[in-house]
Image (tube, rainbow, N blue to C red):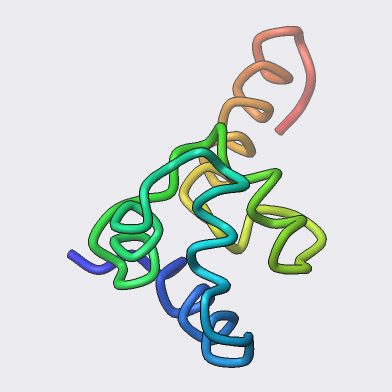
Length: 88
């Protein structure tokens, strides 16, 4: 299964000077192969790296990196609101 965030990262790294993947890996304190796996869409980007990675690549929020988390958070908020007596 390929993850959508890979396409976003591929576009970013194509526009950057050579060695930017190494720079990002160092900033996040992960291996270059980890960033490469994210870029290839082989692995999901862990949530703890999303805010910093989003800032590094210049996107406003990390929901484009992990749309699955955005959907999950909306679902939890809706269920919490309903549990507190709110309307759907």
